[in-house]
Image (cartoon, rainbow, N blue to C red; front, side, top):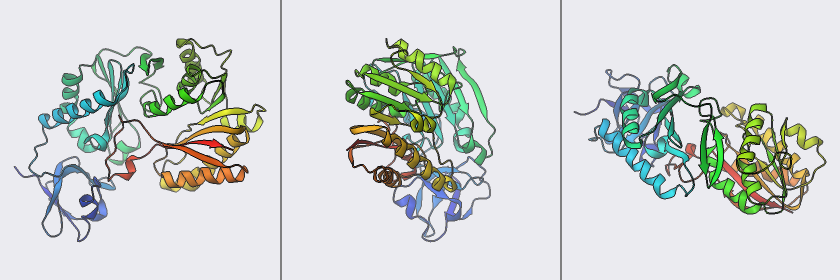
Length: 393
């Protein structure tokens, strides 16, 4: 049976035709009155052309999220089975050996608008963020259990995206055994503990895996600072790469305690590689240590578009203070995970900090997430993580 339709205003179909998977509420002229939030609808241009099917969400600014350009597709259990299989095939080809933790489903990038699923060994952590996925949650969960065979599926469906779609938070075991306090994982042969229930994001910054590998390669005999170190993953890689010393700084005491344990799991002592619970900005202003390599991976400074100017000042200050502690010819790896700070703006911010420090920066590599975080070509909003690896003269 055909899906109910939403009809677009004249000349408001261009984004979908260019490969962007969203329509905002202002693009819609009218919708079939039978449609409710989370239903699958067919988008139709003002001249009557079908643009595809997707989730309808009248309660959100993003009123339509594309599922398929084929209006004849049936969105059922088989549909989700095929998409999970396709996602798993990509990870089988791109996740490196010695790694059992990665993103299995990356929302629009894998054809699941509003769903993230991360894998930690035998545990899956799923986050449902849209009304459309919410309506198909049970089918998707069953498909995940049948296709992946996890011991446990933890659901962490909470936060601003659900509030925007008028969905209540839901956190708990969705399938299988209760979680242990910590789940041990391997990444590129290194050992880490994770806390999928209480940790940031889903317990570990899986998107940084290829950038951590760069640090392992670059750290031989260097003195390294890992700012905003969280549970010390970059620190472990630097130590494994032969760093002379790694100092980790994070404001969270529990995260610092986990960083100490992660160093120990891989044969490194926190006495030789200190972990400091403290404010990174204050540490940079007060320390007399000069570093050969500094890593800055702060939390998102811009939660909304209104925060961009304030966030830009924060990013610039963090990078400027780091540059003041960086040896000539040293390396800076710096990141922003703020959706509203795009890659070009971030480069301008870092360039401004380099100039204010009276230094010259060479871009060695622009950085982003690993291949287990695919993004649709037309979906610029999917490029949330951006970074720079610089040599600073």
